[in-house]
Length: 231
Image: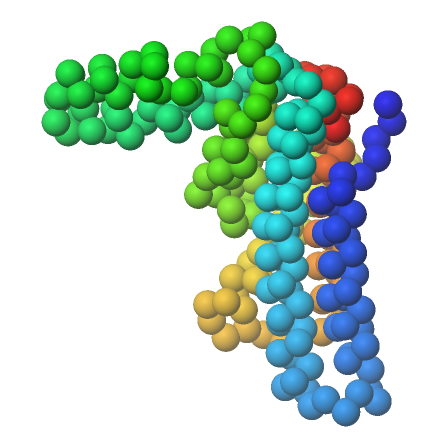
């Protein structure tokens, strides 16, 4: 099965194109908007593009889990890292409490086979239903920093996805993506330098390309570790 865009990528590119076209439309000299109004729109487009990346990640992972669930996957078909991360999520708070209170009886009760659903994830032949949620994969790492992207996709079993993007692209897209995030942070937290329409177009092109490679790398990973039918 050859690669095809995920529905999340298709939606992301559609929304990104709308924002870029808006920025382009108001950039022309004949636009009645003032320089300050144009700057506000350029900045908003950069800020909203970052939000669209967050939407892409959430929708992308939801679609992947949906495909596993509706196409008859067994737990062995899912990435091992995803299963392990979910087991950790179901147990870590109980161990934190134990470390503070040293109440062994309470810990044993919380981790009993009948009350802790995480044990279901150990058995390869169990059908995948709803044992894993998107929140187990994204957790508190929603913002698309380089560090967070590596964390989120490691939970799918992909080690250091940002380095893999550079290798697949044969160029340093990581630095370009970090430049986009730096501009977004500048807009959010401090006064920023002027943004031109060329700046907007460059960042949009780089981010769209970045998402392209994320989509493709995850596709290859799923085909290798699971089956292409789950894409």
